[in-house]
Length: 522
Ligand code: NAD
Image (cartoon, helix red, strand yellow):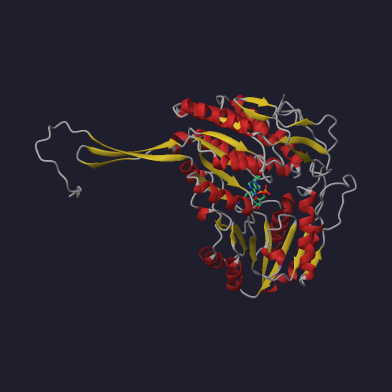
């Protein structure tokens, strides 16, 4: 059984349309470098969001299968942990090359299962690929420190792998988020069990195949499937030492507290409500294009989507022009030429987004651009919501309080920069934020006072590249953001520090009396 039975089997053979799949195959799971058929009777149907045609059935792995994944990862750890870092680096180089070779195939799987446009899906792959590229620097990143702390005495540090670790992924970046985890977890010497989103595991399955081809030994990378039960298994399994989670607050806060209570390291990136403050002195044209792209790209289903506009002073007069540009975007199947945004992930998500738009109307906001009811001619059965702009929103409204996670921009009016900063800081989330201005001092004041963890100055989606780290704040991260993804903090998360203090003296000890006081290093 091939992982890519519905997704193409070679780097040049993959679907390029939303046509109905004639022979639907179940998604396999991946243990010991083999694609296996689950013996479960519980499946989750996966539909193409552009058509609602069935693409595959995703198994919910049985407890025996999940245990087999742990046993395989534990066995692999015994040898993988002692493999030379240069060997691991070589495998990572090959993994990077294979991802590049299979870039279009990975992107096609994302467009089919998740719905985003093919061009945007290529970006999803790239941002993960860059983490794998950065992980190739493992020999440098894993170097320890040494200091001669006294005569004949030195202290050295080592970074050692933790053991079996797990990753639980969301639906919105089917390649990028698995690639936040696979490279860093494995290059540091751990073995990883990955649970992709049950809504679009195809890209993770292709990555598993590429990991095998790159030379990862059996058991170093495993992929299992399921939802709540699989997650609870991971949280309760003592052999799993660390959990990486990316997703919404409900699941993430539960996973962080349960995982931590069970003694595991947990890093958890959660939901968001990202604001942009717009100052009248900004470059208006750049601002309009940046916000339209960042609010509606990927149908607003990005954790760093710019979903909330804070219009300072006269900039509220620019809204009709903003609406014109948003209206010009093409909403269509992700494989179609010229498509700017695709459907949202599910009928339930569409209905939730539409009800939040309706609540804004009831609560007295102005629906400046209404994307409800839109259907592209070729795909009448997809989960469509076209770009929507809600003006005159206030912080008490439901559409402001909740993460909408759709192509909906909510707009609030304030008179001053101070008011904008206070409003943004009063929000419970703190993932990303942007300011549009030509003034350096204004940008500096904003940068200093704003609480969100990732700040863009004339940059709408300031996601840090992998030599930095993903640094959300407040309720956008669990545990106060102490453990962040990728970059040096990512290496730290997946490794335990060991410090060794050694005394190597050639002289014989002269005193016959033991010293019982703490040394004072005079
Ligand atoms: P989700 O929380 O529904 O699902 C994420 C994962 O958790 C999935 O693997 C799912 O199977 C599992 N899960 C869901 N509910 C669970 C429960 N009650 N118990 C145990 N496991 C559960 O998230 P999603 O809808 O797939 O993704 C969208 C969310 O992810 C948005 O809130 C978005 O902001 C967030 N996100 C955050 C970041 C970030 O870096 N901050 C990045 C991407 C997505």
